[in-house]
Image 1 (tube, helix red, strand yellow):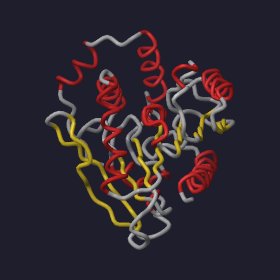
Image 2: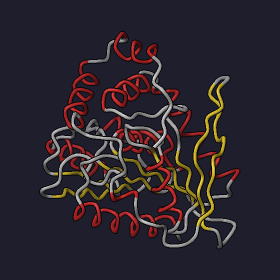
Image 3: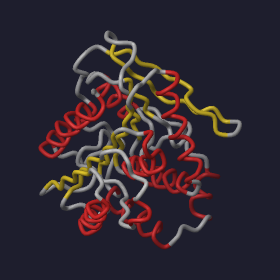
Image 4: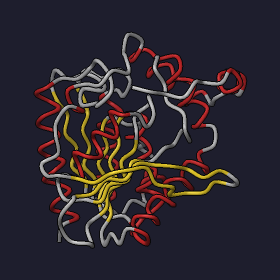
Length: 282
């Protein structure tokens, strides 16, 4: 795996700018979950696509003066107009393992855009990943702008008629945030053990059907928070299905990392593929 060096200035920013108490607590829990983790590919990133795909880098957004490059994959053969899927990295960044997952999703019949929320950087160690995630999270408006432009790229440049989003860990939280921000423009959202919300006012904008995957042993995303999230969605009448996997911890399906758990990862993949097909291939 290759990754850009983490500038000392970025590390200083992550440490110097204070987080809110809630953000700091979440950051500490993520650091605890990943303290012995690695950025090596897990078995999730080793599966070949179900069909041949074409892929490559693409500029999909501009944030101020900066052009943002993501990774685009789609079936080699098939219709010109396909449903689209935004894939959001977990806290290591857009690395080769996330690209492998983008190809895997493309093999299921989607035009897939793996976004880059770290804008050219990725991490090789938990400390680097934590610094990047915290630094990026200090400007949520910039992250949402990034994701909105990704949606626009799929709709206008790639001709996607229906669009969904999927993300893991850091990306799981931002999959939810993008679903809230995009409202009726989004057609499906899949959240893997991302940071949740339980405030009905914050969840009210959700319009897309949502599928959530969480580990019962995850101390970074505690089960009580997952149940509060599920209950709030239920009270609002949102279309949401939440699965909790017994015996599974945080990052059980991550394409990058050493916490992969085959049984939970396989079942969650099957459920994700079926859910996306139902919502996006109409």
